Structures are given as C-alpha cells and as structure tokens.
Amino acid sequence: MNITALKDQPRLLLKAALQPLQGSRFQPTGFPDLGAATFEGPDGRKMLLVESAQSMANRLEAVCWDAVANDWVAPLQGVPVVKVNDKAGKALTNSVLEAHRLNSPYILEGKDKSFLAKLQSELAVADKGMVDLKKLATTLLKYDANALLHGVFLAKKEIAGGRMRLPRALTAFIEADGVSVAASGGVKNDSVDPSGDTAKGFGNVPFHREEFTGNVTVFFNLDLALIRGFGLGEAAESLLIGLALFKIQRFLRDGLRLRTACDLEIKEGSKLEVQRPREFVMPSLAELEAALPKLIKSAEAGFAKPSATTLTYED
Image 1: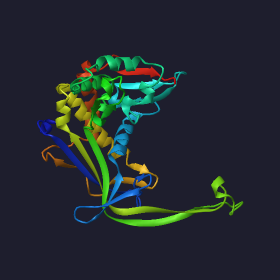
Image 2: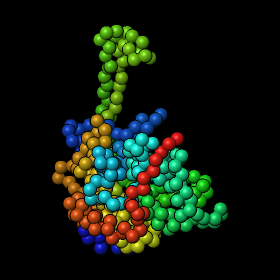
Image 3: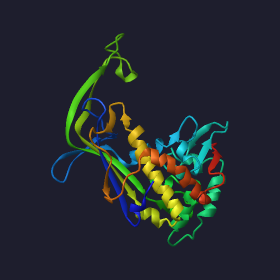
Image 4: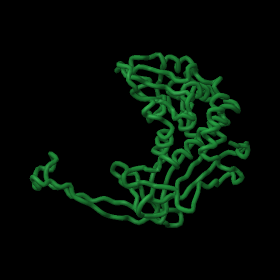
C-alpha cells in the first residue's frame, strides 16, 4: 500500500458511478414527514439524495464488523474497541455499531461507571477555555480508533463539560441526477375479511410507493488535514488512512445492498475514480487486507491494553 501521494494533501476525494444490480429502479432513503429527499441541482437538473452522510457512516462501520464473532473482521483485529455485554455476559453492543460511538448510553449510562471514570480522568480540562482536541484524539486512538474517522460528540457534562467533539474525517454520500419517479403501489390482502378493521391489521389495505430512475454516484471525502491535525504521529496516521481506504473498498464490494429495493453495484465499464489528488493510485482491497495487520502493529503503542475494553451494561 503506497500512500506517498497523499503526503501534504488536504483531502482525498473519490467517486464511483453506480447502477441497480437488476432493472433500472432504486429506492432512496426516506425521512419522516419528508419522504424522498429530492432537490434541484445548480444547473436545474432533478437531483435525489439516495443515502445520507450519517447513514453512510453506519454502513462503512458495519462492513468492518463480524457479528458472528463479535469482533472486527480479520484484517482489523487489534484495533481498539469498546464492547458491551449484558449482565448475563452476552454480547449486547459495541462502540463500532453504536450510532454515537463512545457517547452511547450503553457505554456511559449504565451502572458500570468504570469507563466513564477513565474518560473523565483522561479528558479532564478546566471549566472554561479551549478544549484539548489532541488529548481527545489520543484518548480515542486508545479506546475507539474508529471514532477518529467517523466523529464523536461526548455530550456528557461530566466529560470536559460536554465540549469534547470531533467532526467526521471520512464522509460519504450517494446521490442521483436526472431522476424520474417510478410510481407504483400494491395492496395488503385479507382473504378472510377484506372489509375488516384496518386499524387493527385486518382488511384489504391499498398503498402507493415511489421508486426512482437516474444516474447514481457515490462520493467519498477523506479529510487528511484533519487526521494530521490530531498529532498522533506517522504510524497512527497511516493506520487511519489505511482503515478509511479499507472501509471504502469493503463497502463497494459488500455493502451496496442498501435496502430490498436498492441493490446497487459499480456501473458496468466504470471504476472507483480518484478525483484529488490525481496522482494517487487507490489500493485494492487485497492490498489493504495485507497491509492493515502491519499498520495496526506499528500503531499499537497508542492502544489500550488489551485493545478491546469490555463493559457490563445494567440499567
């Protein structure tokens, strides 16, 4: 894995054209009281948000986790993570899959206050004045390196007055242009009592739905300047970059089935395109899988011992 071309660059920008795996229709993400997020582009084109930045963060994390083994996928084992068990010792959740990572209530709000006490101690700052984001980055590398890429907001007043936060270093989204609505619908049939009380789940219930057609593109933005600004040293920086590139390649291989009616793939005849810096050559997934164990080993001096912190959640 050669990342020399990224030295001193502020951003790594990537994109790839996508298409439905079958047919031409796809279903975008929907929002309460809004539905599909359609908008008009700067040139008047009809645009559509297919997958939001917050949803893409979750998807980039999900492709890194082995739910059966309750651990990172093989190339990432050894990266710091906080695991949470229930009081019977069964796996409950972890900081990779929790929507707010270390700020999860299952990590900070249970009866087990040991980890909260660690964060309070290691992130202690004065009540007033600027917070030390390098200290936050060092602590995240120690316990939850994944949060250095996807951001975190430790909103508890017991931790630096609730002022510790980092933005996303890795951002992604999927949008489509030139979109048209593919309107359809159906009916939930009740063969026993078609005129039954629909409020209770009986009766025939007709419904409508909207899917779309259009040109779909996924975008990735890795903030290299932010990663260097953490001040964690070359080994940790290389690990974070390698981890981000792995997430991107793994998502493009395994994570493009966004919904039942939104199963995508890289467009035939297309590939992942490096927009900036042009001279950078994106490593393959195989190259990243081979390089990551060495990158993890090189950065482990900054990790907790053991790298997986295990808590018990009781409310």
